[in-house]
Image (cartoon, rainbow, N blue to C red):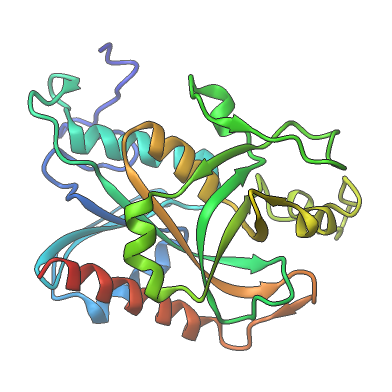
Length: 282
């Protein structure tokens, strides 16, 4: 592989994440905000190293009997494209030779712990939701040779068809006790107009949130919206990873309400996920 395609730093770490071979364990937790990694520290048994590069901050730690990489991705699927490609390269490739390892490791498991806004009235603020599938309005998978599905949504014909990507079934079963709700997540390519917010400019299509609130696929309603999950499921799945996204519901967009204590529900999500990960290593 040419050096322009897999760019390494002078220490043979991958370009953006600055992770080397041997520094990515089989379990990775991603968050958006680099500062959120500090919220994990009280629950870690051991920290091996911390590293930062731009919005990408990593902590390699021990939880129970298992090593876990905690990694901030920043916001959006454009960053997911960088993070997931470079994670797979650091994990499953020989970086110095720029080729796959002779013996392929077991699939990388990636769990996103994020925040989200609900689209259904029966999903309360401060609950935890698990994304069974996600609809990507961000367009990331249009740039890959990917055999997934693209859906036509009545009322949104002016937009490009969103792609549909699914969570890993094994991880869905494993983390079911943590989530009070599950469903179909909408992944937007922005925070304001692409999520139906008319603030400085009017957002379109008009009634975007109402259209998605009434949409369902295979009996699964569109439950929430955020900015990374479809990219994680689409790209991660294509790379052979096992992926799951869990969200702390901080807002209900249809009711126009926001959590009075967002830190508490995020902490509940972090503690619950680490408990499941540590218990599975026994």
